[in-house]
Image 1 (cartoon, one colour):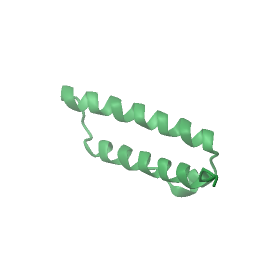
Image 2 (tube, one colour; image 1 turned 90 degrees about the horizontal axis):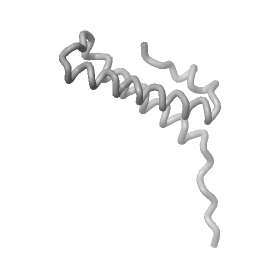
Image 3 (cartoon, rainbow, N blue to C red; image 1 turned 30 degrees about the horizontal axis):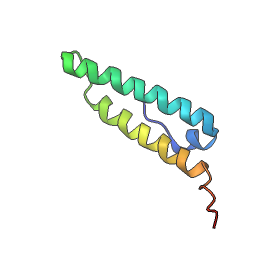
Length: 70
């Protein structure tokens, strides 16, 4: 199941970080299954990678840029 951007808009920065970690763990499990030849739905790898990108994009948008001191 792919994530909708509306779902991500309502999340806070810590929730987004937790979601990214969970998706990375899921991606790892899918890669292991693929290497062992047990992955039935190969398209899930692509979907999870894209979900991670969506979460990280939202996370960077919500994080304020660092202040420059001059």
